[in-house]
Length: 175
Image (cartoon, rainbow, N blue to C red; front, side, top):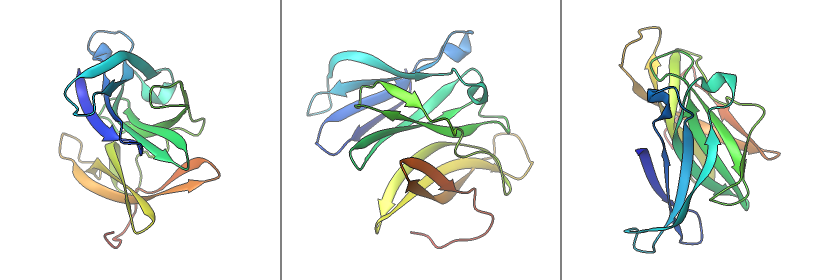
């Protein structure tokens, strides 16, 4: 189990999301979800497969799941490709329920290298004062290596689509 995350989705239910490590050994990599007990200490039911690396931009991995609920719809954000490359990026899928089924968005990836940020990924989504923000790491410039810094951009919901206003080229106010 790698990159596990626990989150509430509006009704108080808890879910654990994670990826398997298929990319280590030329196997499919899946993002899974499973419901947790109200105290968060036990898994309930069976794990559900949500998405796998089946698009070219994802290469051999999908990881870093973030599941959100917006206007009654479930949205799964995830990172794909090699984290150490300029091709690492963020995509999303829409899901019928927290346990799927989910469908990748045709406009993926929604956040990729640009404006001095390379390899953006491992996102978190949060709301402040009726605005939605996405926080993620990226390498500054073309430095390469493992040096990553925190970036923050607005995440817009337009006609059922997610749009990231970034990577932002200049300074912006902190939410």
